Length: 483
Ligand SMILES: [Zn+2]
Image 1 (spheres, protein in one colour):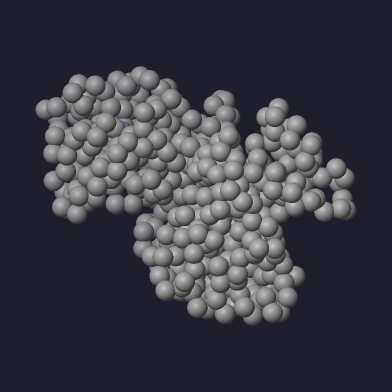
Image 2: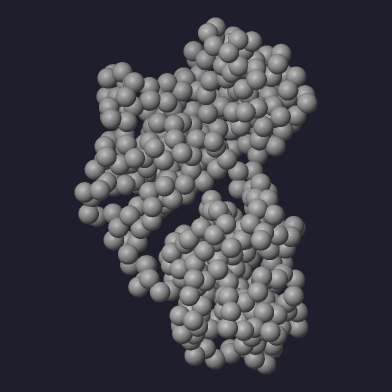
């Protein structure tokens, strides 16, 4: 712990170790790689003295720095005025009064602005009372609530209730009275790590560059942060502290699902979706996810593979990033240009059309295998940071599935996957080949009862449009990668 929080007092560290040892295994902080990643993030969130994790996020900001700190409420005209009026007047020295900090926090996270709305902050003092705290600085009423629910579920006897403690909409809890105990700060951080399955991303350690693994976790914690590179540096230190390089047990799980470097399915355990965006389907929808005029004669240009939001998507073969943007209809997308089209075509399977009678086809008009070939992934939750032309290797995780693109929301979460020879949207199956010649997917008949039930359960969650808040990809400029 000394190697992690170098400015914390010994007393603090002892207490920290005590509660980590009490709880960490329950919350999957139990391998060297998981620890190295957890603490790399925590240093950034709480500071090297742990102070802001316990005291709570500081709002002692210089007036001109509030908007730049990512507190977007201060980017509006009104916000700018508030920042000038209540922010610190001098760049350094003098601590901003508690009264002003409270005003700034309530403005930054108040219900009048998107950030506060997403946090479901409703009370006048929710912004301040539910500001960042704990080892991973959770923020906002709704996050405190789900974290507490997780704590209740995983360690029900702890006697901790962080939601109740800070639920005081009519009063701003003073800094002195608002401190978290070390036990609360530890549990809060662990529960956040656990509920968002950050440990599963940490388990990718060794299968890709360190920076990419850090990025996957940053994408969960604070996607739009400007401290990405600092967090990568933290990891370079914590991986030494926790002896990650000499640990032999961390890669096993990953190797199992990683094939011989020639092909990786776009999602693990691919199976066709049985439900439409609208929710109809089941047995009637067993061919709706397939390629061709499989949906009451409307054209489907790809293969729809069932995938709960947040499922990893993989580069099927080696290639380069060709395009990445938000489309109407398709949502967040990434396109990979295949490195070796000839080798790619050699992998073509002897697939027999399953629903020819209702319109499933082998390929669309003007598909050719004598030029470039592209892989296209749509309706994503997020796409990792890439530059145009950046190389990706077979099996690399490109991002995760979601429900983006359908304005009214979609009930059937899936990856829409296409293989085409020319990047042109809105032309139906033209330039495209049926992806089933490459992805050995499970059809209706091959899916187990459990798998079918899982699909039904997901669609019964109702219509969801998950392109809000921190998951938004709107900042991906449409022209970003356009040639
Ligand atoms: Zn589709």
